[in-house]
Length: 438
Ligand code: ASP
Image (cartoon, rainbow, N blue to C red; front, side, top):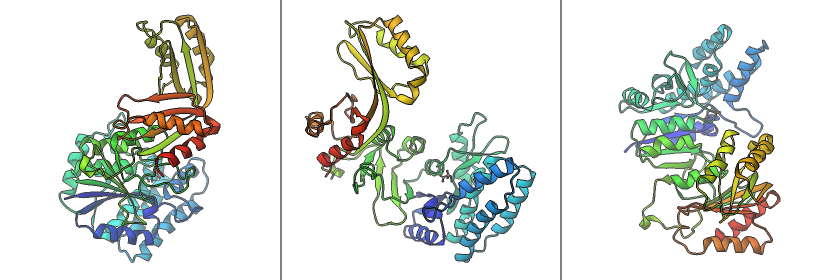
C-alpha cells in the first residue's frame, strides 16, 4: 500500500505546522511519498513565500534593492530550521540563490526555490530522501508535461524509498527550470501519485474537504463526504473553489482515489473523490452533492419559426460566436428558440458585431439579450434516479419569489442549472441549500 501526500502552503508555514505534518505522515506506514508547497501564510496579514519570491524578481527587474525581501525569505526558512533543530545546510543553498540573483536568475527558477527549500527542510525533519522535481518532472518545449518520461524518471528516483518532493516546478529539455501555474503543487502531487501507482492521493490543506456550498453565502455548510470526478468537474466548472481540473486528470486516468484532508483536523475524513461509488457504500441520503454558481452571465435567445426542424442552423449560430472567440457554456433550447449562455465579460466587446451577423445569416424572428444573470448549479449523481427533483427546485425558488430566467439540465442528469438575476444569486444558493441539504 502506498499513499502519496501533498501538503499545501498553510501546512508548511512554520515549525508548528511541520510537527503536524510529521505526526500525520508517521501515523501510517503507507504514507511514504510527500510533496510540499512553499511556506504559506501563518496568519492573515502574513506573506506567502512564493509571493515574496515573485516580488524579489520584480525588484531585480526594476533595479530595486532585494535585501529586505530576500531577508524575509531567508528568515522564514532559517527560523523553521532553528525551531526544529534541523541539520540540513540551507544556508549554503540560500547563499547560492542570492549569488545567482546577481547573475540574472530566471523568474521561474527563483520562484521555484520556495518549494525547493521547503522540501529540503521537510526531508530532513522526516528523515526521508529529498528527490528534486528537476530530476523527474519533465516538460516538453511546448510547455506540456511529458507524463511518460516523468513517470519513468520518478519511479527510478524514488525506487521504493521514502521521499519528499518539491511541488510546483519541473525541468525543460534544455535544463531550465519551469513552473506550473499558481497552486501547481497539487498537480505535482497528482503526477507523483500516478507515476508511483499510489493507492490513494491525499491532498492535505486547511479545510476539512470540499464544502457543499460557499461558506461566504451559506452559514457553516456541510462538507462533501464523497464526490465523483464528474461531479467535481461540474462543481468547479460552475464556480466552486476546489482543486484545479488539471489536478484531477493524472490520478483519474489511473483510477486513483483523491482524498482532500485537513492538516489542522487530521481525524476528519475529508472528501473522497472517486470515479464512482458502490451502491452499498452509498450511505448518503441526500441527492444533491453540492451547489455552486457564478455571477455575470449573458443569455442571447434567438427565436425563429421552424428552428428545430432546420438542418445546420444551430451550427451556423454557434459558428458566429466561435468566430468571435466566445465560449458558450450552456445551450438550453425550445421548439423554435435557442438560448446561448456565456460569461458577459467574454461578449461585451463584440456583442453588436455578433448580433449583426445573427440578423444577416440566420434572419431570426427575434433576438433577445439578457444580462446580469447568475448561474447556479445543483450537482448530484443521485438526481437521475429521483423523480421530480427539478420540479421541487423550481417550486422552492418560486415560493421565495425568485424568478428563473433559464433552465438547463445535462443529459446525464448530473446537474440542474438555473439562471437567475444577479441580485438573487446568494438567495438562490441559500434556498437550495436550506431546502435540500439541511
Ligand atoms: N507555491 C506555489 C504557489 O503559491 C505553488 C503551490 O503552492 O501550489 O502558487
